[in-house]
Length: 277
Image 1 (cartoon, rainbow, N blue to C red):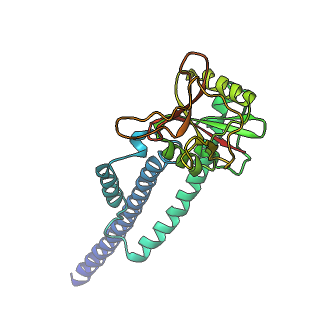
Image 2 (image 1 turned 45 degrees about the horizontal axis):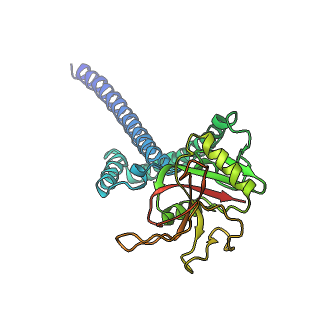
Image 3 (image 1 turned 135 degrees about the vertical axis):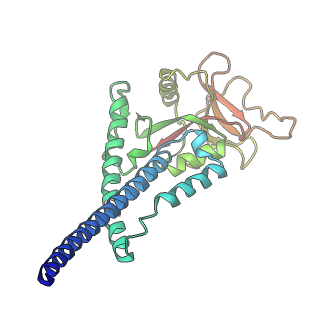
């Protein structure tokens, strides 16, 4: 009888050991699944946030509020947490493994994004150039570059900015606000703008006389302006009620006679043209 009881106890012990082992395996598997989900959630969140800033953004993204920033930080903090039942060593190993995977995904997405954006415009703009092989970061552009001789122009038409912010934006992307050296250059740039249906809009250039009143030069290259295409009566350095005067050069179809030049307050927010050589 005692021998039979011992056998029964031994069988129960084996079954219990197997059950515990299976439970542990399931628990580890669940922890790994949770870790994968946490890392992927963090990756997707990073991509959703980062992709908004890798291209020329609209003002709502470019000037997001502090509340929105704090909300994103809180979401990232919660999504980064790994399961509590994962040891510190396992935690470090899993984070390193999946961060390597994140980097691979990001590299692939960046290359795909830069390729497709230019392909969309290839048929619509025969004078536009593809920057795939250029040293410039092609993934930053959302418009093609118009090639005119040695220069390439980029139209900043996705948000409006004052002259200083427009200049900063061009510089951040490896360019300058545009300079115009000839009538041919002016006409071809005007045609390019009109082809996008924006011939009635204002566009900043790099022209300014902030250094010396009445002496305009191109901030893009530091050279004095030699070719001129001013509207009638311009530049007039009009003084506004708030005391601000006109010191920055814009393109504007004021009289319906095409995009000519006008001096305007540098705080005026409008579209802009960048150039790169």
